[in-house]
Structure formats: structure tokens, C-alpha cells
Length: 276
Image (cartoon, rainbow, N blue to C red; front, side, top):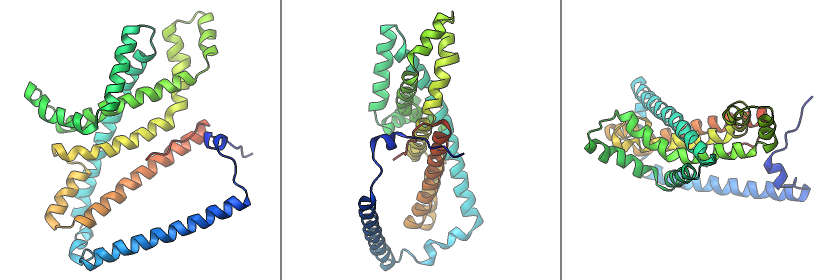
């Protein structure tokens, strides 16, 4: 038997009536036509400037081109995975400090969370690219992109995890403590598993942002998708075609991750988080 999962969207917005549905359909149709006209004029402008000439697209028929793009995609995914893993570990540490009863640790964690959330990712990357080597620390290029991206994301991860912990009913903690369980066992055995269950869609949404932030890897010449795209543009003088293909690849990655987030949200009966 099919069951209906009520989401936050359902709670906030009423089901539109027949008149509203017609208005939405008309507005959608008008918007699609407007977008189609806009795309047509953009495409015409590119055509008039010769951007659709074969010389700007023919190299995509070569196996070596797609292998080069695939190598860049692997670099992007490796950097994103490493950054996401480090962001989760650091965010977990910050979250524990944020919810602990020691005021000093709580304040330190709060300051660090707000700092990492407030500083742009690019500044962290420049710090690891320009300042850290002057201190005699020579990191591999993958760490020079993954560490700053992880630092930029860990504050959001910490707050997401904290929201999951706060969503667990306090009665469960009190019941566990009354049964003789310690604070640490109560957290690891009861509270945290439920918290993770609640925030998995939000964590996946943050992974999408991490993948996007890895595009700054061009600053340190790390061979990711964007860096390899720059090489193709330099070799073939094909700005539009290369960036269009790369944009489609990023859209596909984003789409897949969002679909995974929605699927997990349905299985866990939580609200999906659609990334920007």
C-alpha cells in the first residue's frame, strides 16, 4: 500500500485549487516561452559571431578530448570527496563543542563556526596557496584545495548536525540516563544515530556546494575539471563550447546529488533540501 509522506512544504503551503492551478499553468507557459525567446536570441548572437563553427566543436569528436575531461572530472570528485570527509569530521568536532556544557569550549566552537561560515572560500584557498608554503609546509595540490574547501564548509556541517541533535526528543536522553547509561554512550548510541537520520538530505545538499567550491582549484593549478577546461580553451580557442560542456557536466552532478537527497528524504521521511 502506498503511503504519503508529509513534508515541510506540505505543512507550509496549501494545495492549490483549480483556479490557482490554471493560473500557475498559464504563468509557467508564458515563462517557458519567454525563456525560449531569450535562448533563441542568445544563440543567434553566438551564431552571428561564428561561435557555432565546426572548428570550435570538432575536437569533441576526439577520444583524447573526453579522456582529458574525464581526468579532470576524476580530480574534481577526488577533491570534493576529500573535502567533504574533512568537513564532516571537523564539523562533528565543532558540533560537539557547540553543544557541550563547558562554556569555554562552547564559546570557542561558536566563534570558529561563525568564522568559517563568514570567510569566503577563496580567501582560505589563497591562505593555503600563498601563506602556508612560506611557513615551510608544502602540501600536495589536492590538499591545498580540499582543506580550505573543507574549512569553509565545516561550519555549516556543524550547524546541520546540531540541528539534527536538537531535533531528537529530550525525553530519550533522559530515559537513557535514568537507565544508567553515561552521557557519551547516550549520545553515540541513541542521540547521534537519530540526528544523522534526520540531516542526511541536508548533508548531501552541502556536498553539492563543496563540489561547486572545488572549481576554485584553478587558482592552484590543480588538474580538476575547470583547470582542464582552461587548457582546452587555450589549445582550441573555444571558450563557449568548452564552458558549455563543463556546465552541463556540473549540472548533471548537481542533479544526481539532488535526486539522491530527495530519495533519501522519502525513505527517511524527512524534507529534501534542494541546493542552489
